[in-house]
Length: 269
Image (cartoon, rainbow, N blue to C red; front, side, top):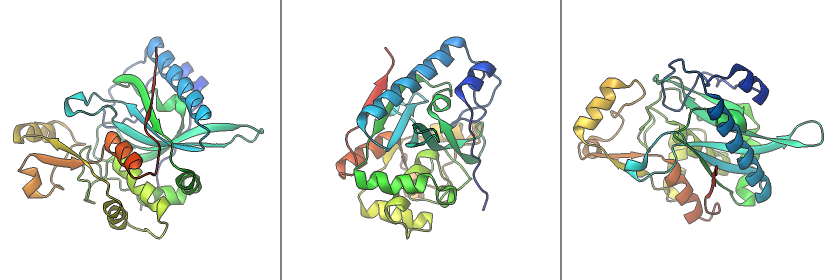
């Protein structure tokens, strides 16, 4: 099993390089120099998010960002990660984010551990974030897992499709890794994706159903390496019903199940 790639970069270095990150949640890696304004906005959103997380009193939160425009599907956020607080070795603490990214629009992915500044320097569609604060019990379980590299990678699957089937294991998109890892945190005996998905079914997680016609699916499959539909059951795929994990559906489920409070949006003025 391939181990995940963990990357860390200081905000100062990001500003110095003034360039976009080399891995994106379903985006290409065309050379593109970041503008001073985009860097400033990304760091401003990171700072505002840290302030909000500190005020919440939480140690762990599920953090979403608006990396892509999904408004045509009724969705506000596109990418999910785990934000957690850890000691900085100097008597204080720092916030880190663990999340899964698709490399440059290819059919593979890796896990990353970053600061919030880097998390928001990924050329987002909209400078807006949202987070949910889990219950204390859920936070404790997640915090132990998120600091354990072996535990984080346990359910990671490199083959990637941005619309991977929620109850399938051929591919795994970013939000799917997050929710399956959450299941493992809640039930440590889970040692496979199939068991994680069974736990999610048992606890009434409901995916988002995207209504994508045959032409849309064909065009997407022919033009992007990180899009595949062959893991979806034929009766659903040919019925134009693509069931996948979205940030919005995870937030709604966590609140509905009593595992977390309602989502809180963080926006720039």
